[in-house]
Length: 610
Image 1 (cartoon, rainbow, N blue to C red):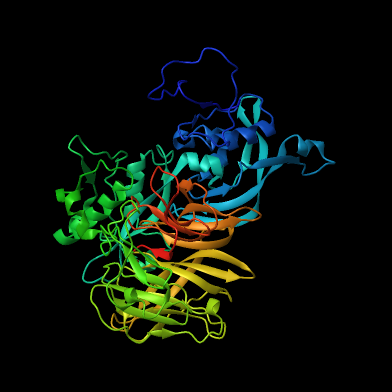
Image 2 (cartoon, rainbow, N blue to C red):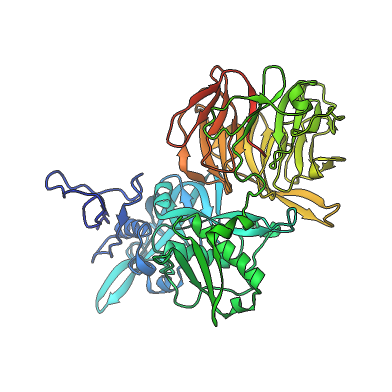
């Protein structure tokens, strides 16, 4: 009855296996135990005469397989339930595989009823959901409970079998099965409005099946393009647009997309795509190119085909025109505050080992000691908060001059209640939080100049903003919020309404991004849709880990341990080293595939542009 997971050189043949084991015990592998993503589970139909408990177990295990159209899985259901069950509607993710308890007797005094129907309860700890748009939503662990009702159903002349006739729609999976079956991908849309006359692509993370989707029979690339064409997820929709005409979809019958031997990927679309003009078509192609290059670097050219033939094409060499992080592309410089309060730059620090030198201008001269710094993505200006936390200054880091008057002043009495470290978005706007208990504010300075504008943040619920980091695309903000002695990571959507000259700006729909971390102390964006987070789980020790913008744990997972991290800095380019400020070891770096190494014994508040 038990479905088996085939590993190594078994029925599933993996490249690189030299021989097949011929000795040793045969063991059943729990489908929900952590394991290699190459594990493949095969659905097995219910055996004749299987008792209700076996039917429930078989159904749960079958849901963890790649069963085409869930045809075998449906054999555990009654005739009516088989027709109505919708496995593709949503997915509930539990900390572990669901537990089943039962049977629950409907009428203990009526044996006739007990002999023909029964109910089992599925329980667990729910940690996330994935909706019909493939959008992931993490949850603080909550109790999960659902019932499966079973009946004796006639399956042949004179033959009855137990089948499930009441079942909730969607899949119920443990975390390990979910990570084995699904993968996170970014699809791309354009930020509403323009940035310095350029369109900015924004990553919209979703989850698709690792191999072939049982419902649509599409491979991973085709699933991803399908979700792209369906439009942005509801959370991101208010701040992004798609260039695909309404109703555009893949041509009927397309289930596989792959580049040819010239690395050209052809995407057949329906006739709705024919209405797009040439400029819009190139922007559509850019959406596909960026989306699929997150899956594979093999795609060098995208060709879109409509109902009447080829519409347009875009080469990877032309992709920078639509770059999501064009403001700081190619920048490998880092900035920090030295022990005299001066702003220094580590030039060309691809490996994080350059020699710091004071920046040009008053921030490098140190006329006013600084405590934190944020550098614009074009690296022409920097914003710095005084060592006391009271004043925010903006100055050129390319030309000499006097330090201008502060643009923001906090009235708080304690330095810890004053200004947060500043952050620049890809639009060239500067953001900072005033943590004054008498009047906490989130402020934006358009273009990094002029009068600060207070930004509304509905949903704070009396929490205080301790720290903030703006994404390169300018439509998402990461906030560290403190309430009741705990600091959590939240992601908000930046909405701009009204005129472009004087827009009304607010941060909407805050979502806790790492609910498993009950105390977060430092954050930094790392790429288009990922953050580096320093925090602790309940009763745990400090850890540094990657978290996706939708709150899911990145495939990169936890990073090597490092002691007493106070702040972290990551670049838009994920190939550049991750930096951290620590107690005792100074500033350390982590290069891809390496361990932490000390870079500077002295210095603080190290940042990349942004």
